[in-house]
Length: 81
Image (cartoon, rainbow, N blue to C red; front, side, top):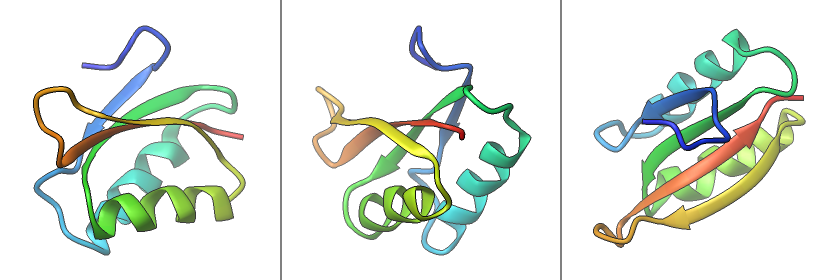
């Protein structure tokens, strides 16, 4: 479920690159400028590539925080520009 600030939520913890970014990009393309999405992703390749690729497209990474119960899973909040 999205946090109070996010209009959208996407769980890509079962996906592998490049599908992690493909699914995230498709979600962001459906969003209006200024809207936010929370993306749940695993540490490693997805955590390195997804935020970097979103920044390269001009979007803002609001925060990246580890989940309290799963240290290998992170919550990324992105704002579309």
